[in-house]
Amino acid sequence: MQAKNNNPDTVAWLYLPGTKIDDSVLQADNNNFYLQRTFEGEYSVWGSYFADYLNTLDSRDTLDANTVIYGHSYKTEEPNERKFTQLFRYCDIDFVRENPCIHLSLDGEDLVFQVCAVFFTDISFDYISPNPPEDFYTSVAAKNEFNFDGLPLAPGDKVLTLSTCSYRYDTEKPRDQRLVIMGKRLPEDTAVQDVTITVNPDPERP
Image 1: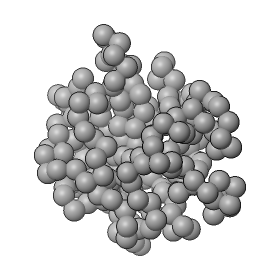
Image 2 (image 1 turned 135 degrees about the vertical axis):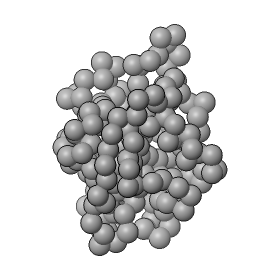
Image 3 (image 1 turned 45 degrees about the vertical axis):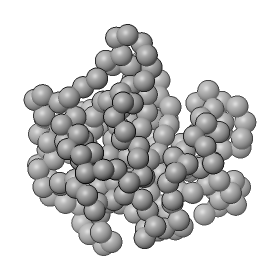
Image 4 (image 1 turned 90 degrees about the horizontal axis):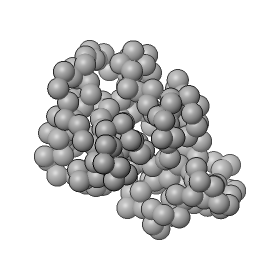
């Protein structure tokens, strides 16, 4: 990976069809370093895409149960804005149907994750644990904006979690709410699963 030659903190490449997200993922020994630093290490309010420092991103076989990647978003949540603001496109059920996959390249191997959850939460819900407890999956199902019939999420699955700030339900302005997109890793050489996606009429929201 050429990016790793230019910055040894590069651990992956993230690509989301239907968006402009097609960039390197960095990782430091804490979750603050790349919060407002570019790939070159220079200051930027937009920072970089970066993996949680607790995650291991060496290969398909060493991935944690839950791999988390962070990125900034613009407070208007306008989905044509830069960086992870484009994750708000997944709030549109038609977009999810048309763009079901997230691609994460590790050491030259393309891992495919199929979107299985879109939800809003505050940080009281520990959605970033690399090895979440069993009730994690129940909580995700309750919060999910959509029902993904044919793509269950359960212990033993490998999950890719994309996290960004959200202000949609942040009426008291604590700045502790997030939009979360989750994908379930597909086995090697497996086609995208045939899934029926419907709107959850009563998702748990912050």
